[in-house]
Image (cartoon, rainbow, N blue to C red; front, side):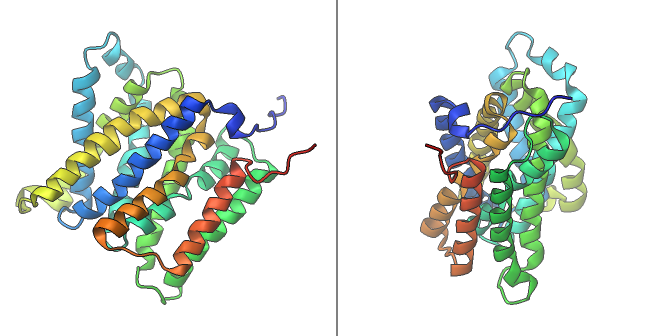
Length: 307
């Protein structure tokens, strides 16, 4: 087997249009933590996941269902889309919402920002074209140090947020890492089909769990602002966002696409501070800084150029 080529800086391999899509996606997914924090205070996590993925799936079926070859494309990749829906929607969404019952939107988004670190490590094992490099090793070390800094106080029992809530969001990031590596096999499939397929699959996965665990028919009707947050979460931060994500993944690769999580915390933190009264501690800010440095190293931004 020939040696894998040395990784190029992302700035060289991603066009300006792709970077623009990445920025837009970061803003949209940052808002998803804000919407989720509002909704999970009134709707149990599994029911909230079911609403998020099913409403998004319905919207995409209505938008793209009449396109030529759309359902033939879905049928041809159905088993793979079922697995993608599990590891890219059902598992991480549930873990994030469980964590957000105890932690704020800003902290959840920071922990989720470790996704590229897990993606790099998982891609090293599962792929042949995104192998580890010195910059990636440094990036992983810095990012993991930031994650340890964020989780450490809870592990020692000296933080307000419980350890399990933080680990749940980290578990979601790990699941996203597997999904990013697995999602590369859909490169030749339309992003519209991939997004619709995985959301339809995750809706089918979550339906029995939500019915058995939450019994949603017994829940009171949530306030209008919660309903609005759920609709925004499903239609904007899920349906529209995943079409963007799979477009980026198809042209830029798993590691590049997962860098969107660097852009998520600032918008989530800002929304949480302005509308939810959240604050970041010094430890959390330092953790975010280390994760950001790690991701910049993954992007080769910290590399010294040879003259």
